[in-house]
Image (cartoon, rainbow, N blue to C red; front, side):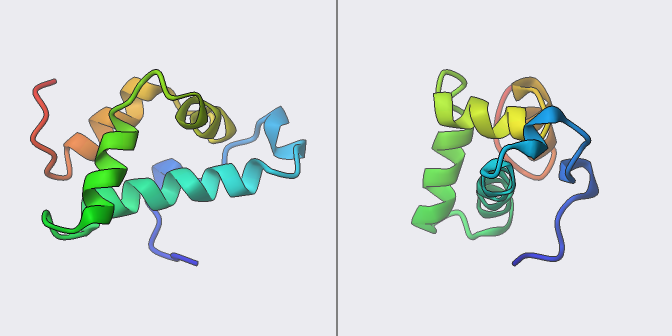
Length: 88
């Protein structure tokens, strides 16, 4: 488990936390953000994570964001500050 998670991605109080899969959904999102930010640009996991995080219409991404009480625009801006080459 990654212990160097960004505090802004930490678990927030939400009714979704009562759902047994909420920690898994939060972990999926945290791993995708980690891969998109920290891996080398040529790493396929970085490319896949970046594509997944940029797909606003992806229902799984939206579910993960809901489990973390985050909105799409916030997460995109957060990772863009870490070196993504996105025009926001």
